[in-house]
Length: 184
Image (cartoon, rainbow, N blue to C red):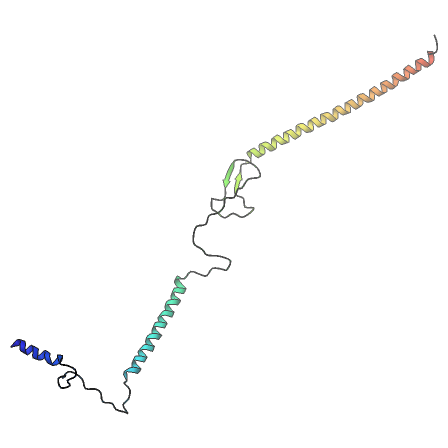
């Protein structure tokens, strides 16, 4: 019997919907009143929707301003281009005006260098030694020049003396020939 009671309880629910007498759980259709007000739930749902949209917009705006203030990178000037990647520079050959030993290097590889910057300081020992050699060579050449001028002066004096002696010798020779030169 227990099985029959259960089927009795279930049967009214499974009854065909076309039979109105066997549908005890269905609600009767609402009465249509021509002057009835629309349901009050619609304005409340609109208020909730508008309030939700306003709250979401306020949260989005505040999140944007917090991000912009604390987390966003500052805007770069127009003269700077921001890129990511690897940059390889060309090798630039540099050469000093003179040679020598390096005393100090002021830049490292990869540092930015402008035209005219002093990159390294050279030892001036070799340069000073070359300068002293050049000064000694100049002194030697000046001494040789002075000796050559002195020799020229001596040779000019000797030439003048030779010219005087030649003139005296001609004068004596002409004086002898004129006095006793005619016969013999």
